Image (tube, rainbow, N blue to C red; front, side, top):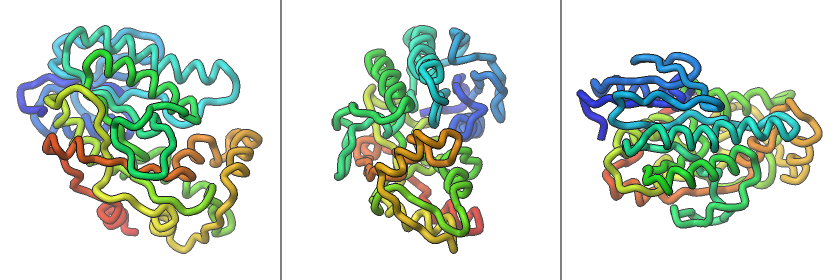
Length: 291
């Protein structure tokens, strides 16, 4: 639990999730070090390029690691190597620099092998379809071996989200959005719920914890509510994946297909047992957004 008087290092604090966590840390009265290429929304900026540098964690009592390469790399081997440089090599440098400090490591539900039912933390971490999923899995293996608390949210959304919801809006053509595969049930994670977990998890036993909203959602219902009036047309998943390969730069990417085509419901019982519970859901987001 983060309390006043602690000094907390938050990596990736200039990003969507990291910024939310940084503001929450500052709101607790803790000292805040924001590590990244750009300053965070509060606290002291400590410059760090996760792809190349060793971070300066001097004075930090706790590290919350959110810096990551997210989405889809560009085409070619070099682009994929950039994801590895941040999500794996940068991870190792951070863990070495932590030098025994407690670490809360934000991973992703994308590390899991596909499963049609509810997934607990012991479910296989294998078979990732994207460079993002593969490198996040490799990075979290290092974190788990080092004794970190690893959080696995899925499809984080909220105000300021630069990925999932804006991509949906940009994919609308002529009042129609094409979604890959049939309707599925899936977990989403409000960014505030993730931030709450980050603030509490420093004292949890090491290991992996799923973090998501209290209930799963139907994909098509979510899209209909986020994009009122837009018609949904379902296309075969194989067609969507082919389009992602053949049309680089479009809103249809392998990462987008992974998030939308495959149902993944996270069991959050392990985190609940530590005293965390999700306080917001999609209804709260839509109300705050005027939707």
